[in-house]
Image (cartoon, rainbow, N blue to C red; front, side, top):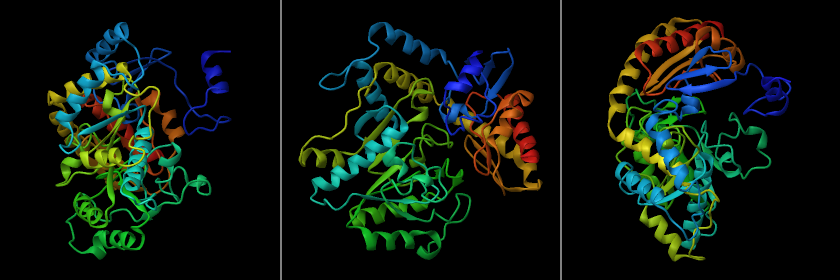
Length: 427
C-alpha cells in the first residue's frame, strides 16, 4: 500500500466523504507561498492554509523560535506555573490589541477560544446574579468553529452544522447586517438591521448572556463584508440591555483585512475577543481569548470565584514563542503595504469575472479576494485543476476565493487570479 493509498483508506480529512475523498495531494515540503508535492511539482498555497500562514510557510524567524524553545522546554502545565514565553507573548499582545483587552486566556485552537469566550459570558452573568442569562444572540450566515457550543452559534439552517440542530442548544438568530461595507450607511433601524437587533434584545434580554459575531467579515458563512457602523450601534444596544459583546476575530485578525484587526474599522471595542489562525503565523495551533477588566473582575468576585476552564496544553511554550515571533514580524509594519498591494491587484485582476456567466459578485477587502457564483461550486473539481494551474484553491458554497500569504509577489498573485478566473468559467 502506497502512502497515499493508506491516507485514503485510513485518514479522515475535514469535510470529506471517506468513501469518495476526492483529489488529495501529498505535500513533501512547504516554504514561502509554495507547496512541493511528492512528485516534485509545486503549487501556490492561495489559501494561506486556511487563512493562517500570513508570512508564508517555514518562516525562518518563527521556526528558529520554535527550535530554540524545543531545547529548553517543550511544554509545562500552566496551572500554578508560568514561563517567560507566555509572559513575553502577553506583553506583545497588549501592545497590539484593543486597549481595553487587559486579560489574556491562552487556548488550544480557534474553536476552543470561542468556547472559552462563551463560558466567560455565562459565568460573568451568573456572577452578577443573572442565572437565567445563558443564551447567545448572533447573526445568520456566521461561523464560529466546529466544537459543540461554537456550533450552536453557527447558522442553523444554511451553515455547515445544520444537521446537528436537534442536538445543539437553541440560540437566538437575526438576519446578517444588510448594509455592505462599500455601501452608504443608512441611519434607519428598519433598513440597517438594528431595529431587528433591538427587538430581539427587548424580547429576550433576560436570557441573553452575550451577542457574538464575526466583525466586518463573515468568513465561512459566505465571505460577506458588512458595514462597521453596525458594530458601533450594536455596542450601544448591548450596553443598554446589559449584554456582553463578543468579537470572533479568528479569521479577521492580524492584518488580513488591510487593518490590523476588524476592531480598527470601528469606534468601539468588544467585551471579549477571540484570536486564532494567524496568531502563530500558521506554524502551530494556538489561540487566545482576551477580555476587559470588568468581565474578569466580575467573574473573580462571583461564585466560585475562579474561571472554570483550563486546557492541558494552555500556554504551550512552543506556541507562545511562535506567536511572539509572528507578532514581531507584523510589528515591522510591512503587512500594510503588502495587503494594500494585494488588494489593488486583486481588484484589477478579478474585474473581468464580473462579466462572466454565472458570476453574482466580485469583491475585495484587504488580502481577501472573492468571486461569488450564483450556484454552488465544487472544491473537488477545483482541486483537480490545482497541479495544472500551479495553484491550490479550495472553494466553498458559492465562493471561489483567495487569502494569499502577505509575502505573495505580483507574479505569484497573477497566477492565483488567473486560476480563479479559469475556475469561474468551469465550475
